[in-house]
Length: 387
Ligand SMILES: *Cc1c(COP(=O)(O)O)cnc(C)c1O
Image 1 (cartoon, rainbow, N blue to C red):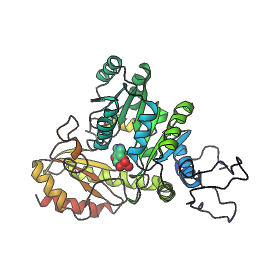
Image 2 (image 1 turned 90 degrees about the vertical axis):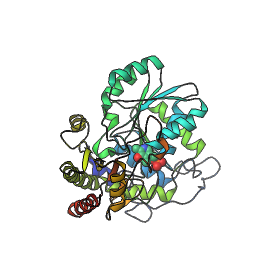
Image 3 (image 1 turned 180 degrees about the vertical axis):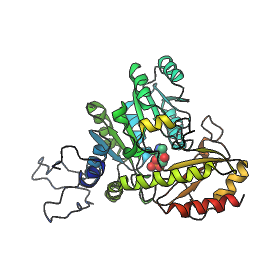
């Protein structure tokens, strides 16, 4: 690219997407080949030999992801959890400890507690907004990794990335940020001091609910960490396949315009809920009374497309509304162009019931899509009327 400092969407559309040199194809060809012929023994053409080790379609996505996070290295995986696993096994050893948010995504907690836990990695779930407690725990426990998800899933807590980076570094630990909810369009953790960014690209980055994937992004100067994650990707092999990488790249090109609309629609729906008597509480950082509003305004460039609500009528009301919407589809996942409704207690977060990470029974999580917002509001209005 000839521009000195390309903007977000210019990077998204052009980085890793050079015009094909053989046919002039504007969209880079999708490479399915699992193996690559060298020019004689030991003379690889452009570094590729075998599909687990490298694939040009995956490379294109990795270059795009690194540029968009303002990072220097990116690695694409078959799922968000596979990406998280590569970070934990690459950067930690049995006997070490991870301090994490007590409102983390249920699947991340399940991975860390039940898979890594069995291999000797301990975890301490904490309220990461209590910075004094986090600092005390990091000091007392000698943890090597601090793991934060902000905004968090599904409680929409906003946590101070720069402050956590300082605490982690004062204790010789690394800060990992799960940037799935915010996306690099709204939040750049590496610039705020984080060491590692992880993504479920299944969500906003893919953006069309048609491809599962994950990514790890590391900053300048993280060469050693990058080698460790690269080795996990290569030696374990939880890589994204070529078609998955291609679909993710295609989604990523429109991330900026999609996020603008997600934010706009979510703000309007959150404001609608805030005025509704059946809604006890609206959890959306774009509302001025959200405890993380000011921090989010500083740390993010928009408040995102996820809105959670707690119903005054308790669990029964939440279940009724979840099953009464028509445009909002009752389903797991988030971040696609279509609006989705989730009942975390029994869906996405069923695995953390009865643990410290359990979510309220009157909670609904909405992934606000990019449909016409008047139609979305009509839909939640009729659903709330069904209580
Ligand atoms: C979905 C999700 C994950 C897990 O990603 P998969 O692609 O489902 O493996 C991790 N973190 C957050 C915040 C998520 O929403």
